[in-house]
Length: 289
Image 1 (cartoon, one colour):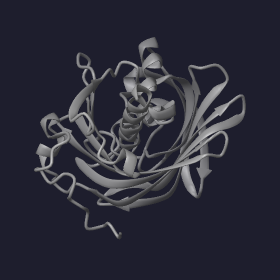
Image 2 (cartoon, rainbow, N blue to C red):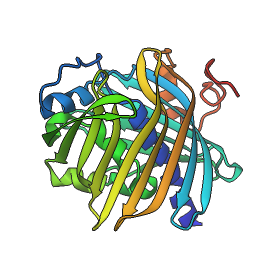
Image 3 (cartoon, rainbow, N blue to C red):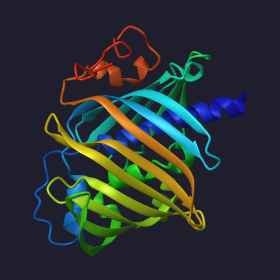
């Protein structure tokens, strides 16, 4: 039973990692005139991602033996100044339905991120320790997404050149966390990121994991503009071990909207697991099914 609860909590908080990739903090659209690696990673940090967002994510998770699991998750975010709040809820499958997670991402030097999960079978909110992010993400795949939205000053970098990726002009940069605590938190070390020039959207990346001979790879497809924000409609994250793919997570996003004045009540920890705020029932007008 405890093993099942641990897996469920990892799954729900994993969706917050996905959401982090889709809704990174940003005050204004970064200028596209990057001239070196520092300009590029500052552009990633300041990329415009809206002040709030909502979507449903359809996930297909494949293990090394070809076994597949399907997930359907409701996810949203809201900025509070320079900080960010994330919330997610499992819609399908039935055995995981209504499990929720909420995260407060802090971008200051003195505050630590906070994560909570809601387990409907216990009718309780549980705080998840956030110092080791790699342990609270399903398979650590989405740690890449967390790395890409952290502060530029926390990384060293090197400019690797230019490329065209799926018809998009990109800058290629190498990045590496400066602090060992960041490596422990993410479970990732140095990596290469390809960044779309006009919007600073990371469209491809690969990182060396802290585990020996292991890499994480993130790819995107079907890029589109939604409410003034440039985002992928489809993306894939997979883990390689000694050159062999051992896990793959494919995501398709539907009903996505940005800057729609979501109620702040939805992102209050007191509402986690609640039934009166309208969080669970609300649906975007962009949702087709």
